[in-house]
Image (tube, rainbow, N blue to C red; front, side, top):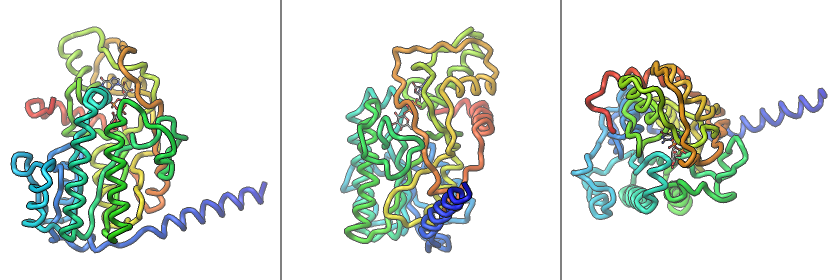
Amino acid sequence: MKKILQLSFGILFLSSYFYAQEKIESDFINSKDAKIYLAGHDGLVGAAIMRKLRDDGYTNIVTRELHELNLLNQAATRKFFEEERPDYVFLAAAKVGGIVANNTYPAQFIYENMMIEANIIHAAHEYGVKKLMFLGSSCIYPRLCPQPMKEEYLLTSELEKTNEAYAIAKIAGLKLCEYYKKQYGDNFISCMPTNLYGPGDNFDVKAGHVLPALMMKMHTAKVEGKDHVVLWGTGSVYREFLYVDDVADAIVFLMKHYNGATHINVGTGKDLTIRELAELVKEIVGFEGALVFDVTKPDGTPKKLLDVSKLCALGWRNKVELRQGIKQMYEWFLNHQHELRK
Ligand code: GFB
């Protein structure tokens, strides 16, 4: 028994030593006035990265609205890089949506995401960007992936059909980073966040993700005095949720401390069923009616819990627990009724 314990501790020590080897001190840490291009600055994650960069004292952040720069246009993207010559890039621009949006518009999800990634990553290479961070998504892992999902399980079996198009585009993005690093030596890295939520989310009940959709449905039902809300699927599948300011913190942390050739998972390491999530949202919103599950709607992947040991070994952990995060999100929702994306 003692020998087994010693052996396990030895393996644990060796693996954390191995991962700790990848922790670096990037020039980004002390480049507070370097030019940073934040692509997707007005999305859920982009806005949180902006808050984090400003809090950390970065002063020279370049952004473009959609009408100023269409990232689907290669020539326009190239011209932007030629004129601005950013030192660092955060690639948080993407076409995103919940399970039904992914399943209904697969052509748009694969085309738009692949174009945005290829245009930005190639222009970053051409114009000598010092470091680039690409954001993926946990749906890149196989549908029936062993749990929790380690980085090396990528491409080991079939993807979940409801979001295959989006997942293939995101896999292409992280492979672009990997291969540009391998062939050209570009310092392009990528991370795979789990399901995200928080202030600024998309509350559209048809196109959005589960958490903002549940909040909107339950809040509306409460205000209108309805006795039930209809949710999708069976409610028995598991999901992991990370507060958006936590993911922004992790992304900036990785920009400062990670140069690895392969992607790195970003999550909490904890998940719950959709029914448990719905009960939690119900309690926080103060809705007293019943939860009805429409099983004609898809469930998606049965479980997609990220293995976050690699990120933890670098010294990062999430701060905002799910209950606290949902409370903060609901407070924001109540105070921003006129500017909700829905
Ligand atoms: O958040 P969600 O759309 O995305 O759905 P995925 C998660 C689970 O919640 C599914 C259930 O099992 C849904 O059936 N659900 C219950 C609902 N009620 C609702 C509702 O009112 N709205 C929504 N949206 N879901 C997406 C992918 O997968 O996650 C993307 O399609 C991406 O590609 C993203 O990876 C993070 O977790 O299933």
